[in-house]
Image (tube, rainbow, N blue to C red; front, side, top):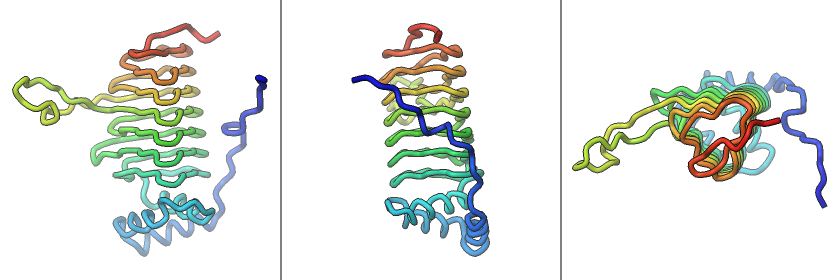
Length: 218
């Protein structure tokens, strides 16, 4: 029987983190090197207790470029080169998601963003707005090989890096793939399993492989 229930995520007001959390984060930054803090994070990375969640959140504040309030990092989350990542308030990141930072990259994730389990984000040049939902297994690719030399292995050719932008209030379906250079306009819905190779205008629904606009949202 079909029914509609009230959404919880995104409807709760933002609450500041307890004062002891930023204070402890400052202590860790003062007493331990970046490499040491990374090692400490790894000790708690796969734990499922409340204490593991707490330590992941506090340690993220010492590793990432910027972290807002109420960050939830599920077990197994990884973010290589976290110093390039900025995350807003009330962000949830599901189990075993990977935010693949790059030394020369830049990534900004807005407020009240929900990232499902097993997502993969190439964060070379990525901006995600507020109130964006990412279905489990969805992916963002920020680069592709030029393949401009037929006699050379493709994997050995140069990388073409292009920005990806996902604006506010979008919903990205399970296992959808956003390709390099794509902009998803505000309020879009991307269907499950879609491969988005071209930008989508605001308030449209797109689906398919390759993704095509189905209709404008009413």
